[in-house]
Image (cartoon, rainbow, N blue to C red):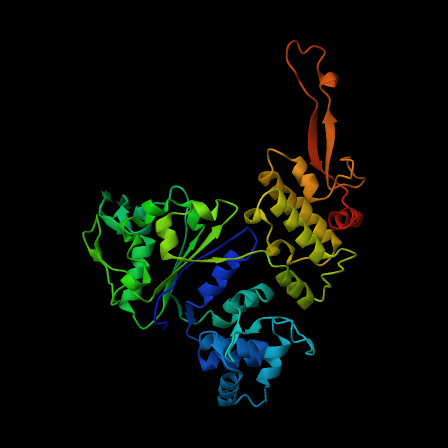
Length: 423
């Protein structure tokens, strides 16, 4: 267990991997009671070395050194020699291992100090029934709570409150105080001080922080946790319990910077959390496409790297960094048709939300206008003119100006896309 707890908020534009990061962190707080018999049975039925190593790592909480994995395999007496280092490198998510013959799935990565980690998210993406198939008989302990803040989320939901509940046995309504998600995970963590627990808060900036945390906003500070030098407690208003936050509870949150500026966050929250930015990262796109044998600089003639960087640079110039697009949009690109669908279904609707009062800026983002301001042939975001004279015979004293009607080109081509980043 770490010596001190962590309070961290990851913030950035949409699609920069914040939720994905939380999902990966959640897997660190899930314990599967995997027996050696389950591991041996799975390997004998599948004979896939990556499955064998994955189950061994999950049995040991997901992170091990190659030598530790090798020792475990040898102890299972499988009757076959497995080269752990070779399997880890062949199925590695690290594209820097250029001389290695890559195999699917890419699920392992080196996480420092000689340790390797298996991504349970990547396992499930490549083999959706993995956990059901090999671990359905395992006992599962989840050492975390997950909640999404929203405008109607309250102190009563998070800490405790009176929430009427129907009691079928007595045909009555129970008005006794009920524990909220945070109080419940705190109680569990306090009962097991030898283990780490966590609460994950998605969209933390969408709730009323002062109202949701109430008097406990001070108690979550690391030095004010139980048994710390400045331990602080509070009497809860409904149950009248003396409450203190355990030191083995980590708090992780995410915040979409396009939803509300980071600068508007409650000062009390900012003082008690470490804020870590998650910015758009074109290298993640490059790595993911390369792992899937796609050249990110030439996807059917489209340079995805230049495309992504150019769009984001223009958004930053026209708006700000908080509204750039994230790399998640392009992670599944395999051909030009995928890029066209991403532009039509994801990027344009997002841009229409960003520039709802000045849609011509979307044309500027896509470089759809030439030096004279005229619409290019094969533009992505097109417009037609609604002429007032064509629709009204008489306008009286009203001054009705012609108006542009914007729409997506139904026939976007590779040439249209290349116009975005090239002259």
